[in-house]
Length: 320
Ligand SMILES: CC(C)(COP(=O)([O-])OP(=O)([O-])OC[C@H]1O[C@@H](n2cnc3c(N)ncnc32)[C@H](O)[C@@H]1OP(=O)([O-])[O-])[C@@H](O)C(=O)NCCC(=O)NCCSC(=O)C[C@@](C)(O)CC(=O)[O-]
Image 1 (tube, protein in one colour):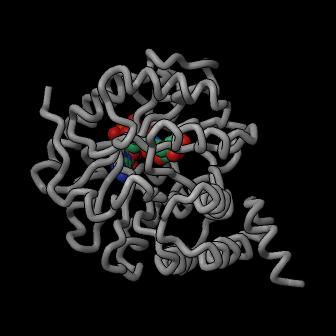
Image 2 (cartoon, protein in one colour; image 1 turned 90 degrees about the vertical axis):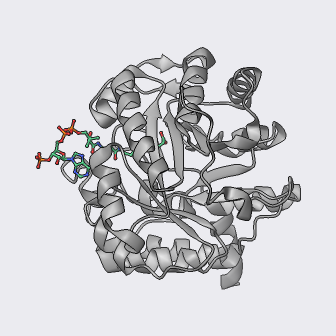
């Protein structure tokens, strides 16, 4: 087992007080990966640049996965090369294997500031998503995190299907806890718990977090990643915040969905999360109006209605 390492370029610069919640914006990656029509690279770059001007400090911009599997992310090198890098923002990318991290590292300062490895609590989902068993994926991630440690590159972990799986149904907390431990043992600085198909409720989220906390892992090292398929995302996030989670993944305008989770709707909208957080008195450093503008920019390009209720309400007020 590896020691639980937090990379030296630690998150302390981003974490502030217990009242501060980090928003991990996944719109350019999770949000766009499922779009059938290829979004032109300059549009992605403009979208990311607009997000960079909202006060967000963490933006997942692309993924180094096979372009045959996820064609939309095939321009990962070009996107990372072209974005304006705002000091203080960490631009991250998914890397499922050694090929992915080596590519990121080969790009030098045009690479990603941090990477994410992504596992699943369901065997079927793991096979559909990354074409291998959970065990094999962990062996690959061991190698990825070993390389990342040598290069001092922060690694975030993510676990899909932590409460439900599109192929296997309900997932028990006991299936998730050992994975969370393994990702921390490999050196992940944080692990995001994903409700990939949005079936969780505050009760199942509470049970999951209780089980993880009982294993000795603090909620302050976890993030929550909710999809809003059943309309429970905001309630689930409120539950997670109550239990000490201080990092929320979300996607501006509610974009998104996983290509290997049919029927799953978009991620929870960042605007809705921000409204919740501000209403509860948390600080985020993010400007809601600028965020709405960035979301509207990409939705106009995609010719789709904004899925954020907060964005829709504020946009309609602006017209009056
Ligand atoms: C993981 C693999 C690559 C395994 O795919 P594989 O076919 O088993 O891999 P392989 O090693 O046999 O390689 C096959 C081909 O892929 C290429 N390849 C191999 N690795 C890479 C790489 N890193 N970058 C670029 N190309 C790569 C490799 O070079 C080769 O190319 P070919 O010789 O056929 O031309 C594949 O299954 C894959 O790309 N899957 C896509 C996974 C994905 O992006 N899923 C969506 C993101 S996860 C998600 O959305 C969930 C999350 C995180 O948001 C949380 C939640 O809500 O649940």
